[in-house]
Amino acid sequence: MHFRIVSPSACVDIEKIQLAQNLLKSLGHQVSLSEHVFSQYRYLAGTAEQRILDLKNACLDPTVDAIWCGRGGTGAAELVPHLDDWILNKPIIGYSDSTVLLNYIAMHGGQAIHGPVFQEIAVKNLNNQPLSDDALKVINLLSIAQITDESNKNSPYALSALNTSALQQLKLKKLHILGGNLTVLSSLQGTSNALKLKQPSILFLEDVGEPYYRLERSLVQLLQSMDTTQLKAVVLGDFYQCPQKNVPHSIAEIFSEHFNPLAIPLYQGDWFGHGIHNRPFWIGQFGSIQDSQLII
Image (cartoon, rainbow, N blue to C red; front, side):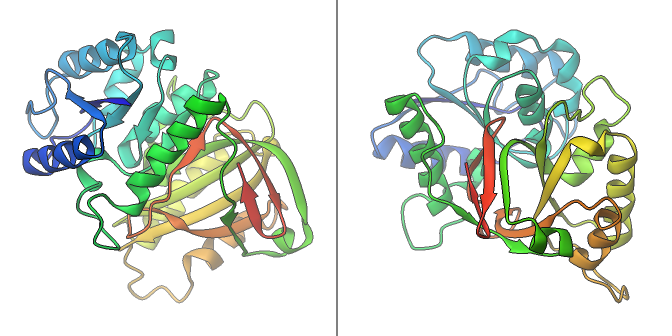
């Protein structure tokens, strides 16, 4: 496959990008870097004009099979006013600040992959492999989609029920998959790119480095600014290095207080987020929950 590496958000680590590029090439893939991938403008990977140009060129290049975001950080929201249907042309891989792009694509009828950013794939190595397990799973997801024209033939994702509604809801079918970084999602509410649930949906949430009071504030903003009647389930990922300080309640307990009155099933999925594990999954696809498993 031909991967194009873009930097729609913050400045990337050049050495990590080059290492990941060489390792992916060693597996037989073509990896090309966008023109401004190493650009710097303040803490951003180039100006908004440079970043949107790279993203658009990648989407319109007929030789490119998939687009991989180099890093998260901040900045992707600046690109939203310049997006158009061309963003739906290719699968885009990323998470964290790339949550902006993933959900834009999903809400406009496309599909994207919530998975590790490119500069991580050669350094988050669990089993001394050239590439991390999660990077190999990204490639597997894309390979299955290419060969069969279907992206839902993947092994199940384990879930743990966190509230009574989840324990009582034994089966949920055909839920539109949305979500990603909680802080990023809440920052979009009130904008033209606010998260909108237009059909029965399942929302994935994760975060990094945010204290519990900020996480709860972001959750309240998110819930009060969208139609929760279409929210049929929520899955919490890794809230990595989020300081609990003197708070007596866990993340699960705090979030349950907000979802219990709405009778929305709340689940735990430790396999995605900013921590060691960030197993890829399709945003914009449809998933079902059965027997404590998510099937996409």
